[in-house]
Image (tube, rainbow, N blue to C red; front, side, top):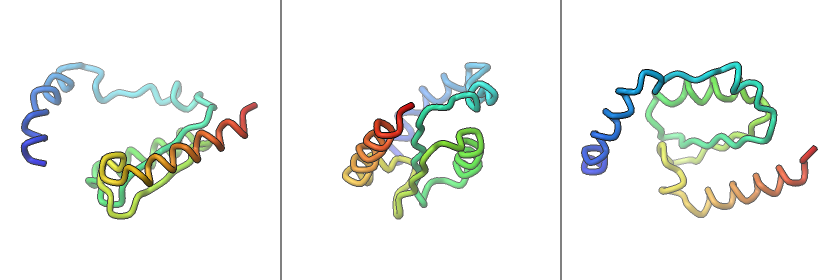
Length: 98
């Protein structure tokens, strides 16, 4: 994990040089009325919890899934469960299209 973080540090620093890297047009996001899927791990760093809560507020139609024992990348640590959830979400979204 440390090696991965170190290898990605230059990219992270480049992203921080973008003056809009941490800004989100919340009104535009809230206007999104299509299906959405929010996923997280119950072992994610605490910094992500407020972001997830705010996304859930802005996207009340979103389905949320939290993976037990997963960190911030459940698609890597829990791939079978993640794929099953994405497939179920797609099936649900297609069945509920307007």
